[in-house]
Amino acid sequence: MLKNLEIDNTDLRILSLLMDDAKMAYADVGKEVFVSGGTVHVRMKKMEQMGIVTGTQLKLNYGNLGYDVSAFLGIYLKKSSMYNEVLEQLRKIPEVVNVNYTTGEYSMFAKLICKDTTHLKNVLTDKIQKVNGIQRTETFISLEESINRPVQLL
Image 1 (cartoon, rainbow, N blue to C red):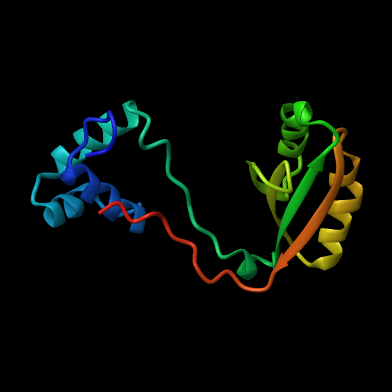
Image 2: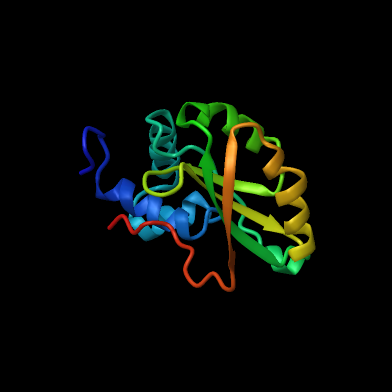
């Protein structure tokens, strides 16, 4: 049982199956979990209302679409109080696909997806470095993503 949330092992099994394949029909999920497809639907609605399930996403192979560079950006802010302002400016940059507010050396850590290193350089110099509130950045280019999976619930 999860802290303060009324879910059981059946809910966790449903979530685990759908995290592996969000296109799986509720009827097929039900067969795996030994409940009806209607029960799966009701339980999913319940978990949406509880804020456990917040949406679904389509996974893409960006490399096959011509986006060959994934980079991580450690961001130093001029002042930590500028976080929300910087975040709103980063939201406007399409290549920024993920931002975290962090402890440690950086104030923020972001993930960028770009077509190539020239595209990355242009995003850094023409967009990121012009964001008011960013003092400086440190860039890490990913050579390979070896693990990308949801957390195991059971």
